[in-house]
Image (cartoon, rainbow over all chains, first blue to last red; front, side):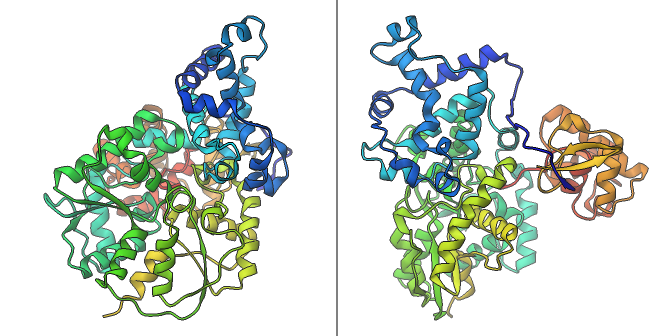
Length: 434
Length: 111
């Protein structure tokens, strides 16, 4: 292999829509998203630039185009042209130009390659603009226009056909039987009735099977009545990342409906970040009612088991630092839970310079890890994290999201760095006390 | 992005060696990728690779390994629709390796 002669634009398209129709589809969708909140947000930016300093993509490159609020420019234009109080005048005088197809293609990179929807910009915005959420809404328009990175579109098509990006549900029993045999731990599948419906991240059905086996080990230890189920097993939600709202709803419903069907009171989510965002915090919106089942992340589950004394763990007695997955901590609120589990494991925690609510994203969230062409940018972001981890001098580097782990492992490989992130779940399972 | 040179022509690949553009694929490219993977292409290999191209044409996705095995079993017979046969042909995974040679994207999973 040799290096290419120069960068080639990798703007991907899906479907057969003409250029004009794509722009119109995007604009129509943008406008439909404009509730009072979005309109207020678009109107209230004071151009202070704090979101740039907060963004890992800007920090890692120094390139002004990565300023978070700027990623919403087509969205902003749609507002002023079509929905704002002076829209007819703005349109008549063309005060704000309609985006061109070329511009939307440029924005594909800004919205999908260089934003992980981690919400660090949202956190620092003095006007309270939820930039990360608006990016998600803008992605919806891009999806409607057939302008998303092809790798993400491929995952979307797979999930539409299989109900999962990894495998059709009908193959789940075989996969679980293999994982079960490989790790020597029973994993119940398709039980007609259970208290806990356990879900997985796709990687746990492939490269990270140890995580799944470890969850099983802990659930079996406490004598839980639990099962996985072919009708709702994949907690990841590519619809959430792609702005494919119909798919997001379908995948969310599959989980909740399956839990209800088997009479489960708890839906346990794996160590996955966006699964938590999609299932814990957005599910009710798609379900259309109060959730009939308690949805918890693996970290909460471990924390509760340890705090209530249902499991005990051996103390490792070493130093550790913790990478806070953005969807679980900043956007999900589980900052303290992970730290209580780390303390129970006897770790002396040395925090990263930016941690907890203000921790930097791994660089792979929001589908960026899947988007091959974003790899060079992701590696630059990785340097930020690597520097902060090294500065702690900690012996262990722990996190609670499989996608963060995959991103950080790829970054470490690329940088020739010998540290690799450990899973909080695996540490607990490996150190269960009798 | 990395490229591979086949017959003096560069073809873009991703960092794992999968072709970026589906339309770039031809038999020479397939042979080149297979060689880099230490796969000696036989008639049986081509049968799977061609099957995959047709599968992608129809479904627009790259099949997961179990899906591939079942689909091959249905079309080419049970003696070929089993993982032992397919792993013998493509030791690093019939789905991943055969997709790479067929010029398809990597089958999806978590990433």
